[in-house]
Amino acid sequence: MPDMFDIAIIGGGITGASVAFFLQGQRSVILLEQEAALGYHATGRSAAEFTRRFHSTETGQLTQASAGFMESPPDGFSDVPLLRPRGNLLIADAEKADHLHQVYETERDNTPAGASPVELLSIDRALEKMPFLDPNWVKAAFYDPDCWDVEVENLLQGYIRGAKTQGTEIRQSAPVTKAHRDGGIWVLETPTGVVRTHTVVNAAGGWADDVAGLLGAMPLGITPHRRTAISVKVPGYDVSHMPEVNEIDEVFYFKPDAGQLMISPADETPVDPHDAWPEELDIAYAAHYLSECTTLEVTHVAHSWAGLRTFASDRLPVIGFSGQAESLFWLAGVGGYGIQTSPAVGQIAAALLTGTDPPSNVTASGVNAARFSPARFEG
Ligand SMILES: Cc1cc2nc3c(=O)[nH]c(=O)nc-3n(C[C@H](O)[C@H](O)[C@H](O)COP(=O)(O)OP(=O)(O)OC[C@H]3O[C@@H](n4cnc5c(N)ncnc54)[C@H](O)[C@@H]3O)c2cc1C
Image (tube, rainbow, N blue to C red; front, side, top):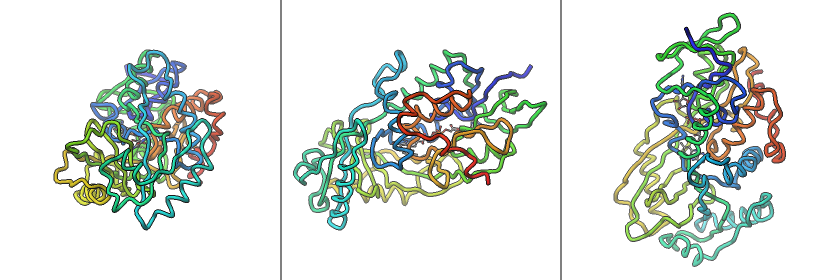
C-alpha cells in the first residue's frame, strides 16, 4: 500500500528541513530529497555567513527574527554553538573611498536593534585585522562586528534530527518525477515508491519552478543564479581569527574557511537548475580580486565550487499556498540568505500550513508574511 501523509515536503535543503522541524509533529510529514545526501545543493555550498546588515528591509526582518534561534537553539539541537563570531571588514579602493564613508555613515545611523555599532578604521587598524591587505589598494575601511560563521551542517542536522524525533519520515534518493491528483489527494511518484499526501510543499530550491510544473502549476520565474567560490592556502598566516572581508559593493568577498581562505567573485549568473560547477573565468576572477587587494600571490587554487542562489524577480522569498494548484504550498526563492533566515522562514511556513499565528519573534521583527505570498506572481 502506498504511504499516506498530511504533508509531503519536496526538497531536503535547509528550507525543507526547517519547515519539517517547525511543524513540530502537528501533522504527519514526509520529506523527499532527490539526492543521496541532504543539503547536497545550495545548502552544502554556502559561505556560511550570518550578518545583521546590508539587507533589504524584509531580509533584515527575517534575519532579526532568526537571530534568537541561532544564538540559543533548543536544548539538544546542536553539540556546538550555531554561530561563531567572525566580524566583517568592509574595504574600498581610492575610487570608492568616499562611497565607503557614505555607507559607513548610513550604517552607523541605522544600527539594527540589538546590534553593535560599526567602526571606521584607519588603514593601519585595518591591516592589524587583516595583515596581508595591500595598503596601495585599500584606501578606506570600516568594521562591522555583527557578522558570524554559521555551523551549517549542525543547523541542517539539528532540523532533521528534531523532525525525525517528531515523527517525520526522511527519504533520500527519492526524486519526485511525476504527480497527479486522485480524489482530492496528491499522488507523488518516486523511484522509492508512491507517496500520497493532502498537501505538497515545494522546497525544491533551484528546481522550484520545475517541481511546480510537475504539479500542474505555472512557473513563477524563480531563477537559479550560479555563485562561485575558491579556496586557497595562505602560507605563513593563521587566518582562523581574521574577519571576513567584503569589497564595499560586494564585487568580491573572502573569509577564513577551515584554515584556508575562501574567495568569491560574487558572480550571479542565471542558469537552468543543475549540479552547479565553477566556470574557469569565475575562478580566475576570484583569484584576481584576492591578488589585487592583498599582497598575496595566488599560484594554486586548492579547491573550487559553485552553487545555486535562487531568486524570484523581486528577490523576496515565496512562501504560501498556490492560488492555482490545489494544496500546493510554495517555499522557495530564499536567494543568498536561505541559511541565516531559515528559522524565521521555517516558522512562517509552518504557521501558514497549520493555520496558526507565527510566533512572537517573527511578528516582533515586523515581518509581514503576506509580502511573500505567491499571489504576487500569479496574476
Ligand atoms: C556560494 C554561495 C554562498 C552562499 N552564502 C550564503 C551565506 O553566507 N548565508 C546564507 O544565509 N545563505 C548563503 N547562500 C544561500 C543559501 O545556500 C541558500 O539560500 C539555501 O541553501 C537554499 O536552501 P534550499 O533548501 O532552498 O535549496 P537547496 O539547498 O538547493 O535544496 C533544495 C533541494 O531540493 C531537491 N530537489 C529538487 N528537485 C527535487 C525533486 N523533484 N524531488 C526531490 N528533491 C528535489 C534538491 O536536490 C535540493 O537538495 C549561499 C549560496 C551559495 C551558492
